Length: 510
Image (cartoon, rainbow, N blue to C red; front, top):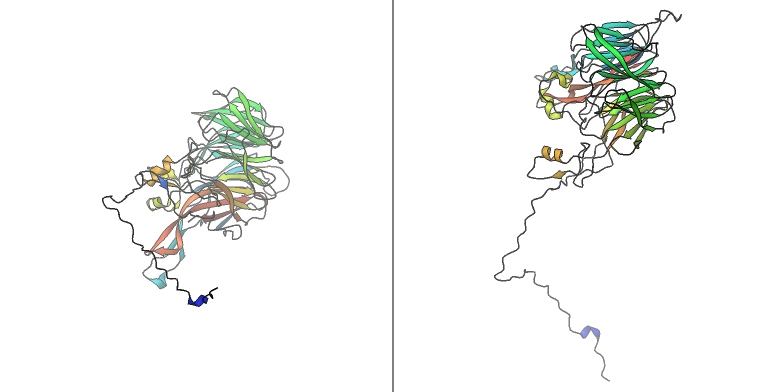
């Protein structure tokens, strides 16, 4: 048997790399492919932004101006066509005598001038001009109209921004003519439409019929009232009364674009939706929602008719109650009663008011509008309002006011559809649902949520009034090419019952 050769004497294994030259076939043209003409997802990095302001719950904005009111406030609102007018309704008071006699309340009209002030001098950095900023420097009482009973609610007409109605705890309706940017405010009529005095707790104008208002009463009754203008002012007539709640009916509101649908809430902790006939002679219960455990204090329909998102959001119903929670119901769903989609705890002691924040222009149009407080009625062209910034001012009985914003849900990813042959604005309008909400490339609606963003802590008593007005201000810190940039936000006023103190703040989204 032959001996085996050692392993190291075996021949070496040699390997050569393969040729990487591509194959070539003569007479065959190269394959060329072009993308089909179709819309594709716009795969840009999603823009994750927390809903933020220039202030927050942990860094509340400082009060810019304080004013002590002569009477305890019950509610307040800014003028619809005049953003420098602040209207305050008050409770009845004896003037501090403590005898309970000679009680009086009032509707107070304040002028908050659109003043520009110096932030800091730039003399050391010549030739830069001085930095400017719009701040409330004074609040002037221009009119006080007394009432023997408390002012429980007031609102401006969505059809005539110069018409305002205030209701009292005795069942009276005060109608006012409020021309913008003048001090010639007049009470044009006092109406007592009920045979016996009944406390009115809430009032709302119809969103479609300019001659109808609804009132909720202490007795739990909802009254549908028709009004008409005449040479003697305004004449009212009760068209219908119906028992809506057990206990007080504290809140009433018409649907956003349907004057035949009415929402109400009261001490029985129930939200009810009512279907009204075309002549307001008959009423039927559409649905009721019973998830509340405490009396309902306020109802707000959404989107707000003067907001930038009025045609681009789902229809919602916001409620506040004595448990301090703001609840959100989705009216766009066919489910009845509507589903509860969010519950936001704002405080522990109850919510007194939910006042919508009006819209302001998109940033590109700020160069074409005046600085200061803003309403689109001041301009004779169609100003595009920003649909991405909206919210409410919540007045809470724990001594604080809060700004609650409606923003895109932070955890959701939204990828838009992009077509190189269609402008982005036109594509955005095409990709909207039946509710007006923008859809993504997979035809899903953009998701929105409510966020408690900022809190104001200037009061020592229950905050019973709060509201906001749109503001175009100047950036007091930074300049670009030697010019101050513009900032958008809101000027917010709040007032409390115990200390009778009215405070003003300014918060910004830019």
